[in-house]
Amino acid sequence: MAETKQKGYARRVAVMLAGIAVMGVGVALFKLSLMGNDPSTAMVIAIGERVGVDFSLILIGMNCLWFLVEWRFAREMTGVGTFVNWFCVGPLASLTEKAVLARGPLPEALLPRLALMLAGVLVLSFACALYQTADVGIAPYDALSLVLSKKSGRKYFWCRMLTDSVCVAVAFLLGGIVGAGTLVCALGLGPFIQFFSRHAAQPLIYGKSAEEPR
Image 1 (cartoon, rainbow, N blue to C red):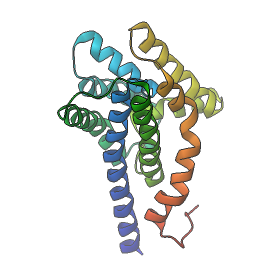
Image 2 (image 1 turned 180 degrees about the vertical axis):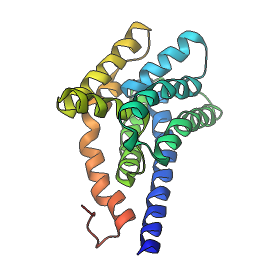
Image 3 (image 1 turned 60 degrees about the vertical axis):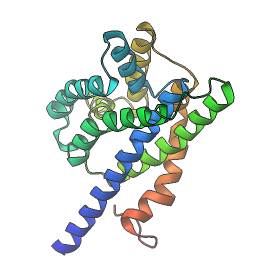
Image 4 (image 1 turned 180 degrees about the horizontal axis):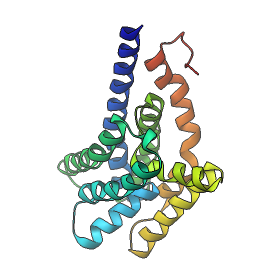
């Protein structure tokens, strides 16, 4: 039994690692589209551009602040996935962006940028499905709305809307890009994440014929 649990945990960690790697690519695609990132990334990018520091370093720093809240009020949510997300998503996104730009400038026309954004939607949704379904630790930013919901008694949806709205407001005030990609991330990723969770993440973790344990 212990060996089975260990194998199951190892598989979940492997799926989480794959999700984080893919997430870095998804964030980079959104950034390259110039149509806006998810709310927290949009804020981090805006801060980085304002102070002249690569956004991956700003992201790690912001995660340090967010983690203080998670550790104080939701320590049970922390795990290996917390730290992998914390330290790896930003650098992976930066490396992907630089690798793409090294091949030459991207087209500035609307359709290519829209295609990049739509690709980012699918890639990021797939990554989130892997990372969330693995359930081996919540990212510091994601924990904020969960803690707020727990402490206030409000529904998670409204708490997530609040944290995302604050990020969007900060990004806008700092002159960051708040566009269609930001809106899609804030409101439209849910159905895609649910689809990939059911048809990709759960089969990878629990097997095609196995049901997710309750």
